Length: 439
Image (cartoon, rainbow, N blue to C red; front, side, top):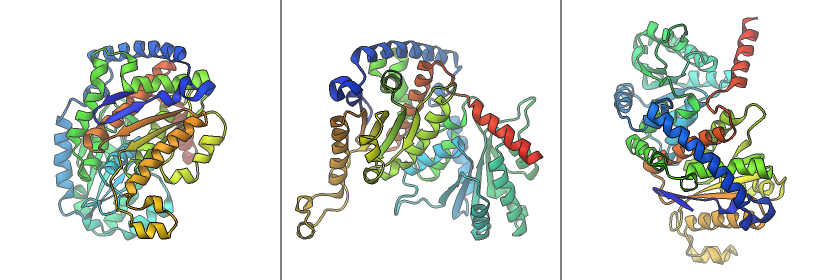
């Protein structure tokens, strides 16, 4: 078991001593640790050379200052902020905002936040018809500035704003996040916004969408929901410290996680990785993880299929498959110490309902017991299970968690000898879409 800040990772449920023949042998794990050590040495070199900007980004604050100032200007007089962006330009921000309380009962921010990351004509038409443009603000994110779905959304919205007689207010209603101009590359979003006098923040040129959770792309929605984004970056920085101090892979949670997950895939035929948090505020973390892992590692015939789940509700649906389906599934449970939290259950009523054992218990006590019991059940069934336990889900832990999974993915890519930062198949689909529309 390893500990960083307020979370602990336990991989013992993935190993042979715990689950028998379907677990990773210790000798095999040792081999993957050796390969991970080589990967970590390479990452330390990239940190020193500055060739992997993500590693040094979390030490910076100037971009946070700029994002805070832009958000303050944008929020003036606003009742709602709508975020347009797809994939990594949206999921990271949703993840951090969700941890801060977005979408959770009675914790919605003011202004109210909404994310529209999927393009659907009927949904967009309904949104534009129902929006009070005078009190609504729009943040539009596209790294390249050429994302078709996002440009379609914003062009339609700009037309609706003009039709509402608010053309003169457009510069105060919109904010863009996109790359700066680069020689030989067109940026449609930048050109459009410059023509309308709309302010823009610079998208980091060296950090792609699914790894942009801790850039202004992810932090701006998080700070709009009230998350302490400086604390989030400190949490992320702490995750990197053992690696930069040359600790072995076995002592670095994200490296150990990568070694186990790739070891299970290569040596034990695991093809599906489930991320199952036991907290509503981590629901979007599972969705973000799916894109991060799938798009980074699913290439060249390699990769495993990530599946989002959430507990305890998915104990009543997907868990049947995880425990009794094909023996190719490994599950990661993310548990947030819930004991003693939530309403207290009345003893008389629980007894009347035939649930006397719940009398005097908090709702959080039930969730804690379920998270622990599912791990035990998976182990008894011989199914690989990793547990990540969180003492307190705050901004520091949020930053640590997202950096953990980003670094785990990067190390996994190196173990598979592939580039975790490109997405050639996705680019092909974009080209073919453009060709069809052009025809």
